[in-house]
Image (cartoon, rainbow, N blue to C red; front, side, top):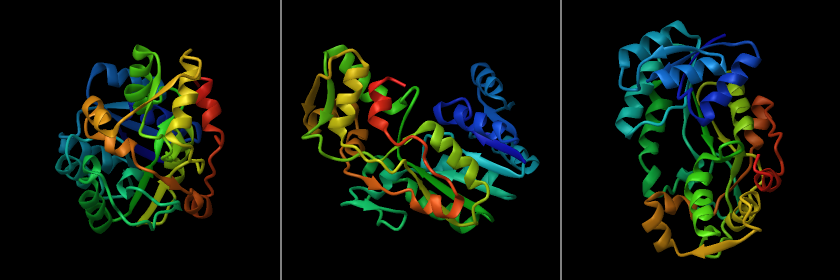
Amino acid sequence: MKVFLTGGSGYIGRATIAELVRVGHQVEALARSDRAAAAVEAAGAIAIRGGLTDLDVLGAAATRAEAVVHLAQATSGEEDLAAAMAMAGGGTYVHTGGTWVYGDTGGVRDETAPWRPPAVVAWRRPVEEAVLARAPRPVIVQPGLLYGGENRLIDAFFVQPGKKNGAIPYIGEGDNHWALVHVDDLARLYVAALAAEPGSVYVGVGGVNPTAKQVAEACAHASGLDGKTVSITLEQARTEMGPIADAFALDQEFSPAKAQRELGWAPRYRDPLRVLAEGR
């Protein structure tokens, strides 16, 4: 299958390109710069020069493809929706959301959970609703908090500040759960989603939901800090991290059962704390 992908030079994108190529798909990937082009080509894709606001480029690439996977992070809901509509006119269109839109889950939930998004991701709802209503063959994947390899958000907001200060932070008591997913498992889910029924929505989670404090302790071991962690208040986290602090403070537990049942996808990484503690 010919697949067009945005966000291919990023953390999720490189893993997804590699998985698409591994199972035999041909991939073209959007690349905004020489560096991005080199990254997607190294992962196995053909680079298509342009950015998310180049709607003609997006439309032409989507027309050549049999499916589209949209991974790139837009600067606004308006930009994300415009890009989505430019790419969603033909074959299967896989759009990226996120589990944070559900807010606190109050136990283990699935895709039927009510939306209670913190402000930082509230813009996603109208975009996802429009995609489901207007795209001919839409599928939405809502990843949990990623780990594995670069651990992009965890590293930027917790590990690096923790290394600087001598202890990995967590917010409040740290007893809120994080719905984690390994980047390689998520890449496999995106590939599986190409065969999903139109209108399907899947949470992309590993099914193991450790607490934020447990994650901090694991990261502290990997960072050579002998497991040292420190509690910070939500107000302090907001000052240091910005609005994303409210997302990190959510208590979320999710099950991957729907994707397992409908797509035959099963997470392979079932011990995230060990992976994090080993720095892998």
